[in-house]
Amino acid sequence: MTKQANTWAGKFGDEYVLRNTYNIHELEEFFQKLLGVSRSEMFLDFIGNISREAKILEVGCNIGNQLLMLQSLGFTNLTGIEINPNALKTAKERIPKATLVQGSATQMPFQDNEFDLVFTSGVLIHIAEEDLKKAVKEIHRCAKTYILGYEYFAPQRLEVTYRGNEDMLWKEDFAARYLTSFPDLSMVKEKKYKYLENENIDQMFLLSK
Image 1 (cartoon, rainbow, N blue to C red):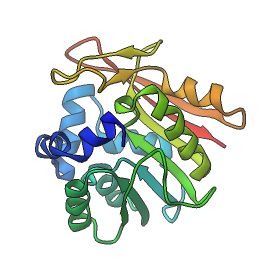
Image 2 (cartoon, rainbow, N blue to C red; image 1 turned 180 degrees about the horizontal axis):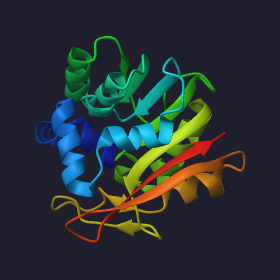
Image 3 (spheres, helix red, strand yellow; image 1 turned 60 degrees about the horizontal axis):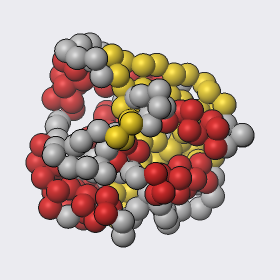
Image 4 (tube, rainbow, N blue to C red; image 1 turned 30 degrees about the horizontal axis):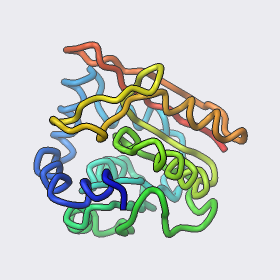
């Protein structure tokens, strides 16, 4: 595995879990305080019209915060893949009805076009360039209709020191990366969310295949 994959699969990833364990109510409050909009409002804005039986995959699901939110919104056919075994164990306990597997975004054990929607939330930002090309290719391969992303935004790729570590976080225009990499994708919807307390920006986008 790469440096980033090894780091997230080990103690560093375990510590991330301890910092980012939210129930649905806490997750709503976190986003409301951060951006002035709740997480459920964001999901409904982008995929509220998608069938609740749609087959959905989250790449890098961690302990399942986002899948729990989707489940609360009525989505019933949920799958997650996660590299950290302890995070995955917790996710299985929290969302017993979901299909959850251990694995990497760069080599996923799924069929071509298997999922109606494939999404990431704060995952692509932690993947180095060489592996990022593989990850977006895998996401594109597994997505039948839609790709949804929610990631840190910058107009150009920009490395940011992450909790004192180098080579662990990058911002960029991830929607543009998909669109330039895969000619069969088109933009359905995009929004940029400025943080309430600083100048950071998050980007959410929905692409159609």
